[in-house]
Every structure is written in structure tokens, then in C-alpha cells.
Image (cartoon, rainbow, N blue to C red; front, top):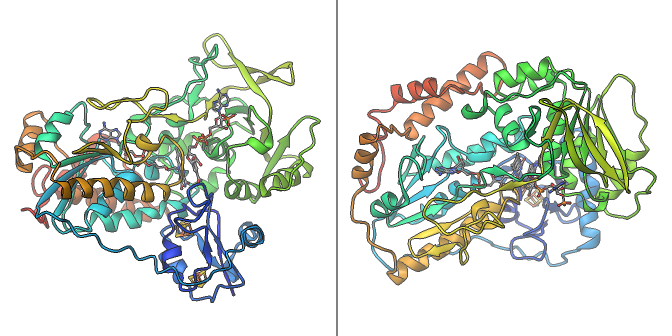
Length: 537
Ligand SMILES: Cc1cc2nc3c(=O)[nH]c(=O)nc-3n(C[C@H](O)[C@H](O)[C@H](O)COP(=O)(O)OP(=O)(O)OC[C@H]3O[C@@H](n4cnc5c(N)ncnc54)[C@H](O)[C@@H]3O)c2cc1C
Ligand SMILES: NC(=O)c1ccc[n+]([C@@H]2O[C@H](COP(=O)([O-])OP(=O)(O)OC[C@H]3O[C@@H](n4cnc5c(N)ncnc54)[C@H](OP(=O)(O)O)[C@@H]3O)[C@@H](O)[C@H]2O)c1
Ligand code: SF4
Ligand code: SF4
């Protein structure tokens, strides 16, 4: 029975390397891989060995027989890909990359700023070289960036990529300095004099603004803040999210818009078994929101959300998914348009929560004196008000300037050449490419950056650090900063899982900074140092 790639694919291509018959495409290096929303298994060539399922970090590949009814549409999606792109050559790819050997003797010490997917993949690539040690620094007291604090709690399969990150963090030569903000607690110059190189993988911290009247009213909230809130980011727990009106409006048509709309319309009981933070879950349980209207300013064909996410939405029981295109017919033969047309024809069932995908509708201003009461929109030249008590902006992220680094304000990125800002300073992930792409996209991005680092090591062009790592720890201590190291993080992780187990949840996130610090400090032998491992002592 063939295997099938399902919606929680994060496009990292681990399955491609594992497949003995080269039947998963597009593969790295093939046209379409960089933009692929997911990969596809060719059912006609699959020999049912299961190697891909073992390799997949997010459990996205399932045997045909194990699919849930919601995953069934993926059989046709996988098959359809091969009707268009047959990939007739089935020679095994043998994609195991040749291990590059360094031309110079180490040790080399690198700081990676940011512990999201990009930072973790960079650390992994660097640690393939026994001469290298890596300290991963993050301003949050817990690692994994948007995987912990962005990916929706009802996508627990996707969050399982943290198992891969756990194993990266367990390698010799790896250490965390969590709860340390570069630009506040340490400067770039501090890092530059303690490390051979610094890699910035700081993501895109801010949201894009609509630039319309009423954007700063109470009840106008950015999706960036909302996802941090429901995912338990300590600094977002005080967010005010009015849920007392029966309608909310989401502006934007990407996957983040679908995520936040879905969470607002999901039965709270279904979220009770996830790692959603406690207070937001309680607020959602009391929510009076029954309808969420998602505004796309363009046509269905131009929607930025991806097919796997739309399939997931369409499969939710007890939710009306309404497609509103006014009188314009949905024409086109792509999988996305076919599914939207099918949804447009579905009857609305009374009594269910409803998610409306409304297209070609532009928000003109947000209405209200102090608190949002509605949104004025235009469609096809007609103006209309939509009553609501909450407006969520989900129109994309934007990278903030990184202290002491060049910055392109238009793209919100650090200018670079294939990841090299200058010898000794590098970028990876969203701060390098801009805020698009899946978790796995950051893997090839990290590989490109690390290739430049290795070039610079071999060329002898890295500046020599003047001070040792222990001196950095002393500097931090002088400034009253006590980093959480990997022993501390493991203690936090254990405690969250222990509390989760008691409630039938994968973890119960700690959200209070003082408590997080206490749990970590009790486990750490002394502040900011792990007694175990280190290749460089
Ligand atoms: C809401 C949301 C949901 C998503 N869901 C999915 C999904 O389901 N599947 C999928 O494949 N992709 C998903 N993505 C995309 C995916 O999360 C990104 O591709 C990925 O996280 C980008 O990785 P990054 O490492 O560049 O940035 P991030 O994940 O943002 O990591 C950056 C890290 O840098 C740290 N940092 C920032 N500034 C500093 C500083 N000055 N000092 C120290 N540390 C700093 C931050 O705290 C953070 O931990 C989602 C994205 C969003 C926004
Ligand atoms: N499950 C998943 O795999 C998952 C989940 C979440 C996020 N992600 C990924 O993370 C990345 C970021 O996602 P995102 O949703 O933040 O960004 P995105 O995909 O870039 O979508 C942004 C949306 O906002 C709209 N928009 C921008 N400016 C607007 C304005 N002024 N008024 C109205 N609409 C406006 C855009 O419309 P236009 O097209 O008209 O500009 C677009 O629909 C994406 O690559 C996404 O796929 C993946
Ligand atoms: S089950 Fe085996 S043959 Fe089939 S796609 Fe997976 S790795 Fe390839
Ligand atoms: S997440 Fe990675 S390993 Fe899993 S199916 Fe997608 S590309 Fe393959």
C-alpha cells in the first residue's frame, strides 16, 4: 500500500534522502522544490518500505491504510502531482551529501543568534565538523522560535519537529544561552570578540501594518501577538483579546490568517488536548465568537494560503467553511480553486461556528471610538460595514533592524551574499530571506549559509576572537544576566511535560518568567554553564 504525504509536511526533504526508489518529488535541486507547498509520493513506484515515514520529523507521511477521513484528499493530491510532473527517472538519488573537511585546524567557536528552525539547522550543519562548537543564543527563555511560539497548537504533528531540534541540541559542542537578548544584554561587538563567527537567525519580529484609520483601537490586534498569546509566550500573556462579540474579522489571506481564524472557530474542547497556553484557552472557552470573516483583497486564485492548509480546514467537522466571492464564479483547474468551488457550493449548517473566506474585499478603515465595532470594506467599488468586536491583522511579518548590522527597511532583511554579511558575520532564515517559507525551507537556507562559513574558515578570513567563552559568561554575570543553558532548558521541558501528563496534554507551558528561571536554575550546576560535554572545555 503506497505511502502518502499529508498536510503537516514542512518541506525539509528528509523523506527524499530516505526513499530507496526515488519516488518523492520535487526533490532538492529539482525545479519547484524551493516553492513546493508539500512533497508528493508517486504511488506507482512506492515499494511500501516505510523509510520515509521514519525519516519525517513531523509525521507527515502515512501509509494509505492509516489515513483519517480528513487526510483522504491527499491521495488524489499526491497522484495529481505526478500526472503533471511524471519524474520518469527512478534512479536512487543517493543524496547523502559528501562531508566537507575543513582546511584549517580548529577549534572554532560560533554564536548563533536565534533558536528557531534556521538557528537550529545552522547549528546542526556546523556541528558536523568536530572542530566546531556552537552557542545558540535566544532572547526568550525557551528555544525553537516560531515552532514553539507560532505554529498553531492544533498542529501538534508539525510541532514534533522539536524532537529533531532536541537531538540537535543534545550533540557535543552545543550549548544554549537562553534569555539573552543581543542588542540589549550583549552587543554584536561583545559577541565578535568572543567568537570566530556570529550567525544571525533572528527571524522577523514585527508585523506589517495596514496603514488605515482605526488600526490602533482596542480590539485591533496583530496576528503576531495573538499567536504568541495562545502559544504561551511570556511577554504576550497580558494581550487583550476581546472575544465578546459574535463576529471577528481577520485581514489577510495567508496561512497565518487561516491559523488564527481556525483557532478562533475551533471547539475549545478540541484544543484542550494540545499545548495551548492555559489563560488563552480559558478565554477561548468563554468566547462568544461564532463567525470569523477572513478578508482577502484579491481573487481566490491569488490567495496566499496553501492547498494542504485549505484541505485541513475543509475537513474540520462541525465548522461551516463558507466561500464568498459575491457573484463572480470560481473558474480554474488548480487544486486550490477546485476545492474553493466545492466549498462555495456547500450548504451552511445552522448552529455551527462559521469561517467565511471572503475575497476581493479591501479594508478601508477600522470603526470605533476606543474599541473596535466594525470594519469598513470595499468590494467591486461598493462600500460596506462589517460589524465585529475584534480585527486581526494577518498581513505578513516584517524583520526589525539588528543592532550593528546593515538593514534593508523595504524587505526587513539583512543584506547578504548567499548568507555572508561579511566574513565572520552571517544570516539565515527569515532575517536573510524575508518572512516566507515553511520550517523545512530553513534547512536548505542554513546549508547555504554554512557553506559560506566553511569557505571563510578555509580562506583564513575569519577575524580571530580576542577573548574566551568563559569571559562572556563573566560579562553577562556582571550585567546581571543569568542565561538558561541546555540543562536548564531540559528541566523546563521535563516540568512542562510532567504537568501536561497530569492533564492529558503534551505539555503545559510555563509562562511566568520567574517560575521558568527558578525551574532552570534548580537544575543548572551554576548559572549559564552546563557541566557536561563541551568540545573546547
Ligand atoms: C504563526 C506562524 C505559524 C507557522 N506555522 C507553520 C507550520 O505549521 N508549518 C511550517 O512548515 N511553517 C510554519 N510557519 C513558518 C515557520 O515558522 C518559519 O519558516 C520559521 O519559523 C522561520 O524560522 P527562523 O528561525 O528564521 O525564525 P523564528 O522561528 O522566528 O526564530 C527566530 C528566533 O530568534 C530569536 N531572536 C530574535 N531577536 C533576537 C535577539 N535580538 N537576540 C536573541 N534572540 C533573538 C527569537 O526569539 C526567535 O526564537 C509558521 C509561521 C508563523 C508566523
Ligand atoms: N501551516 C503552514 O504550513 C504555515 C502556517 C503559517 C505560516 N506559514 C508560512 O509562513 C509564511 C508567512 O505567512 P503569512 O500568512 O504571515 O504571510 P503571507 O503568506 O505572505 O500572506 C500575507 C497575506 O496578507 C495579505 N496582505 C498583505 N498586505 C495587505 C494589506 N495591506 N491589506 C490586505 N491584505 C494584505 C497578502 O495579500 P496579497 O497577496 O494581496 O499581497 C497575503 O494574502 C508563509 O510562507 C506561510 O506559508 C506556514
Ligand atoms: S514507503 Fe519507501 S518507497 Fe514508498 S515513498 Fe516511502 S521511502 Fe519511498
Ligand atoms: S516534512 Fe519533510 S520528511 Fe516529512 S513529508 Fe514533508 S518533506 Fe518529507
